[in-house]
Image (cartoon, one colour):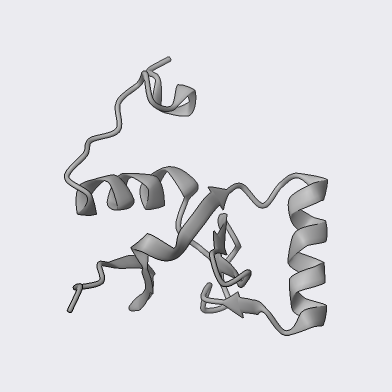
Amino acid sequence: MHRKNLLNIGFGNRIVAEDIIAVVSPASAPVKRMKDEAKKAGRLVDATQGRKTRSVIVMASNHVILSAIHTETISQRFAAINGNRLGPDDDPDLMPE
């Protein structure tokens, strides 16, 4: 039996890391549309606990999960689970100013 890795997305909420397709910022219009469509279809999971949405996670099941944790933090947690470390070359947003 294959063991699934759970990724902490904040406030005690965890998701199966292997099922993540993308972790994106909620600010763009296409992401807002995707979120609205998922809500209408019953595929939206709000894991923000009433806080501001800071990342949108798209799952292989076509579910859309809202998290109050920053996209960079979720990406770093994902990399840590997989034994990788993200560096400045992997994500331009993580480069020091």
